[in-house]
Image 1 (cartoon, rainbow, N blue to C red):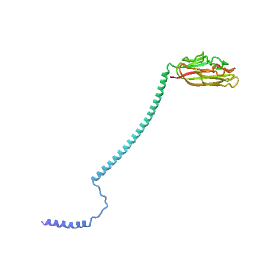
Image 2 (cartoon, helix red, strand yellow):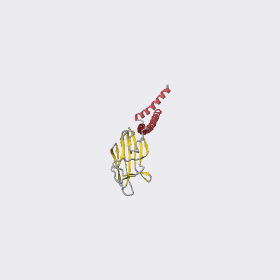
Image 3 (cartoon, helix red, strand yellow):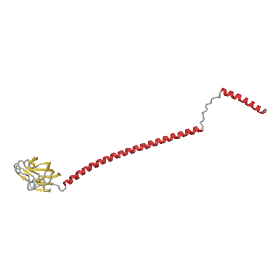
Length: 244
């Protein structure tokens, strides 16, 4: 019992000064508060999540850029393909047109080239200029006896007349069924030389239509030259461009 009382008195004596210190207040310190273990773990976890978000964002941006580049490349390829398709369509239309025309002209080729085997001198006014020799006469439309071309096939034809004249100026007309459709004038510039003129035209002919050439004035001493130095000078040619 005595010991217990002594211990209690000692505690009371120690408690009094401690209480006084509490009443006066504990001195303040600037030491940082050390986070607890739980707080440190949460901060580390948050930092890891932010890092993962940043990495994911960067990866997504890379993928978006790659996809944009792919889309641009695809669009460019599509434009090129559309251009190629348009060109193929255009070429196909041309081929179909050519095939249709070729099919319509199969077995209908008409072409001739007529020459003069000799010079024609003093051709009377209004007389047909007869080219009495042919190098080609497919379709037999041209007659070397009459100098007249008669269309064996209806369609659009092209004719070319070349006349070489000497001594005086030489004229010639191209006629279609008697109507003048073209006129040429071969000037004679100097003695010892000949003038030459060429006329080309296209016209539609029905089957049986006729085309020929006429000397319209029949000048005296007029010479229509057949050849010079072995080469033809005056020539009459024609061919079917497209049949009806």
